[in-house]
Image (cartoon, rainbow, N blue to C red; front, side, top):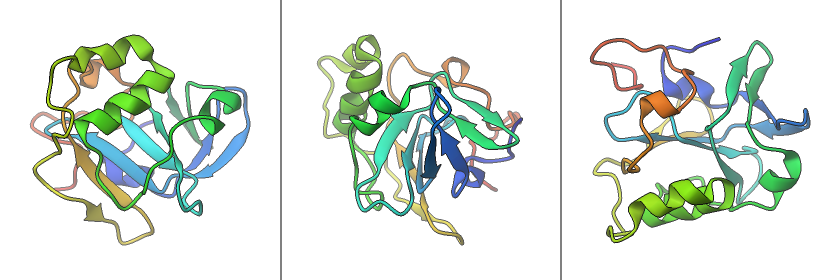
Amino acid sequence: MQIPHARRLLGAPVSSSDGQFLGRIGAVYLPEGRTQPLLVALPVEKATPWVVPLLGARLTADGLVLGYPTALITTGPTVDPDTPLSLGEVRAVLAHYQPAAAEAVHGMPLTERASEGADVSATAGFLHRIPVFPGIGDDDLPPIVITIPGATGLPG
């Protein structure tokens, strides 16, 4: 299953890889100039939701199924869903879930943030632009957003 742009993930139900319902997505994190989102924050009603990478995730008719078990997610990093993440914050999230991937930013300025701010959805939630993370591109992420030549995952 696919969606036309990353914003459509906002409010979607989310389950862990072991089948536990975790809530609904409150924020989506899309690397600058990319189509596929890298991270989501959930549940929407939690003041400091967990932030989870979409590596290994899949979108089904029932919602998003993350590639990680409940125990790993519920002990993972939390975020302020209203605030875009820096490269260092993205690294910290990846270090919890994919330690080898987190090493890709060694020597880079970890305070770097995307040049554009958040896009507040008409529904509850945020679509944040984040810096591109070295070594993780659209081809490394599940094809959740339909790929259209020249598209960036955002509505036009």
